[in-house]
Structures are given as structure tokens and as C-alpha cells.
Length: 292
Image (cartoon, rainbow, N blue to C red; front, side, top):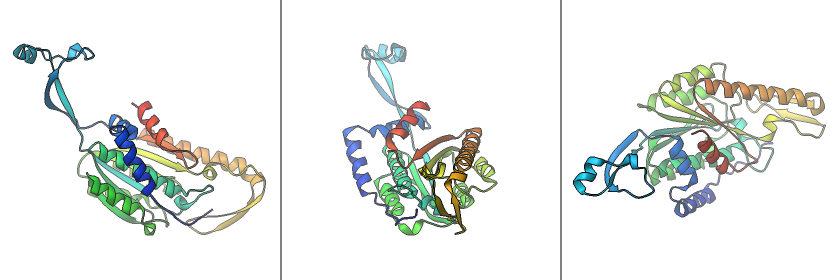
């Protein structure tokens, strides 16, 4: 079911800002910081030892000079480059519920971008379908987040064919050092060489694949009926009865998904599946915590 696109991120932005003020960094930013480690630690000075501290961390030479127990204080060096590749092709503009997959995914992208900026990383965005529709190079700051929100909200960047190679080609040309690449997609219509494409990417980047699914991507309705479906890429239509194809459809969808998960893990990437019927915040936070 295709409905009118409505990417309104203003309520989400307000929510993120409120949560970040109530809880320093926010749970999402905290989970993100822990999961994606910084480049190292920089010495920031000393502080007095307290009873709750680990005594093994005492700097005895400095303590002797100061005649007091001191600990070294280190600050994590962040400044990671994070590129979010957002699939906005036709299959992402589908929904069997109230929210299109691409609308849901845009909120996921915005939330992760917010967390990245909160911890001091450089975050960039590529929106792609048949070609790269928008590209924002990784950068820090509130202005960068505003630019990402504005770009995500542009309806002209949605619909079209699926061309993963176009997005990866741009990433390889832009990222000059090691970083993190997140692909947010339903992974429908992957080319035969998709694993080779990702292998070239993971040679210098950490991969995080976030699969966005609608209930109808994995299973047909329980009600037995004649239905008409259309291919979002070829516009071909097919009339069939769900009684005859329900099990075959579900099994095929499961096999394809399992193959994608397996190949992402072979490439030492991380995989997370999100369903449009569920709130994504807690699921992402739980994933960050469990994967540590």
C-alpha cells in the first residue's frame, strides 16, 4: 500500500532535545558512545582519589609529589567519521500500517545522527535510490544536524530504483580515513554483487546494517483472499490467492533475511532489524548494550 509521503521530523527533534537535557547525553547517545569506541584517550590532568575509585588507578609518583592520593583523568578522543547511507527507493515507500518504511527510517537516521553529534563525532548522510539524491559530508555541530533534518524532510529525495553501488562509490571517494558506515534499508532488491560491494567498504570502515521491515515484507495477511501486488521497480502486477502462497512467501522472505544476516556477520559487520510496528529507541539502546 503506497500512501502520501509525510516526513515530519519536528516532533522527534523536540523530543530528542528534551531527553538530552533530562539525561546527560541521553540513553541513545550513551549507548552509541559505548558501542562505537573513540580513537583513544587523551590525558586531561589529575583528580583526588575517592573511596569508590579503583585503587589500581592511583598515580603513585604524582601522589607522592602532591602529598595526596591522585588519579589520572583521561578524555576519550572521539571525532569519528560516521556516514549514514539511507535507502529511499520505491520499496521503502511502502506500508501496510500507518507509517511508511522510509518515514520510520528517517526518524531512525535522525536519532542516530543526533546521538553522533552529542558525543562529538562527525556525521554525514547519503540518501540514495537509483542515484545519490543527496550527500552531506561528515561534520560536527548543531548546524550539521539541522542540515541533515532539512535534507531528510525533502520529498524529492524519495522513490526510484535501488542502486547500492552508487552510494558505496561516493562513500569510498569521500571517506579518507577509517570510520563507520551505517546502511539503513529494507535490503529488498540487492544486486548479485552486493557482498563484494560491502567487502570493499569494510576494508577501511566498520559496517552497521539496519534493516527496516514492514509486517508484509515477512508474511502475508492471515485472511485468505485474492490480492493484487505490484513490483515497485518494474510496475508489473500479479494477482494471486494468499492461501496458495502464504507459506512459500514467508519461507522465502526468511531465507533471504538469514542470508543477509550471515553475510553481514562474515564481513564482521553488525546487524539490527527494526519493524515499523515497534518503537525503535529502546531496541537500538538494547542492541548497543548487548553487543558490548
